[in-house]
Structures are given as C-alpha cells and as structure tokens.
Length: 160
Image (cartoon, rainbow, N blue to C red; front, side):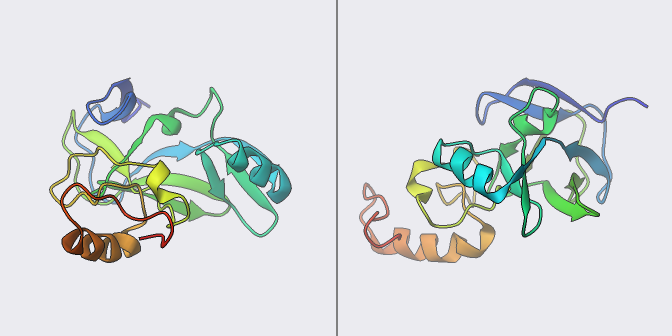
C-alpha cells in the first residue's frame, strides 16, 4: 500500500511530514515507532533533552528518536490536523479532520508547563500561543500574554 505521507523540508521547522493524497478524518496516517524503554531510562534521556519520548504505561515509555520512525519528523501545531492516539500499546498518528494532499501533517506535542519556554512554537497558526504546550494550557498562556507587554515572555519563576 502506498504511504499516505512523505517527508521533506518544512516551513514550520526542519523536516516535516506531508500528505501525499487527500486523507479523510479518522484515518491512521502512520505509527509512532521507537525503542521501548524503562521509566528510569526515559528520565535519563529526557534530562539529556530528548523530546521524542511518549508515555506508554506505568512501566515503559517509547523513545521515537530512532531512524525507523518517520513520525519523528511531524511538527507541532497549536491548530493540529492530527493527534497521537494510543491503541493496544501502539501510538498512531490519526487525522483529526480531512487533510488535503500536500498539507503538512501536525499534532500537538502536549507538553506541560515545566520548562515550556525552552520549546517555542513557530507553527504559524492564527491561534498559536508561542509555545509547544498541550491545548489545555492555551487559555493560561493567552491570559498571560494579554496582561504582559508585547515584548515580554512568560516568567520562568511563575511558570506563566
């Protein structure tokens, strides 16, 4: 079966995944693959700034920073067209809506507010909050941005 995506240079960041053809909402586009690692090893790799780790369960995580994982090239967006879905211990990138051929495939990385300033977002979406955080944190960042001068960044001391 022909792949639904291709990898090439992205206007968002570095390389990205792009739809090769129209993809209907609900379609599994590709699997997020990687090395199954213990929580202790996951913590060690996260402390070494590995941003490709997904939570699997209470014992294990998945490190997607491996050559056989094309999903590692998918970029974050504050207005994603895909989402990561866990099914039976596997992580699938699934279309949230109909995606047009040539459109960049994106998902929200879902980062929390710990060290979020280290992960600026350049997705270009009209509703971009400027950082790669989970959608649940968008209102807090927007509120902070509305109160702050235009050139001020969120405070590392307060987390917002």
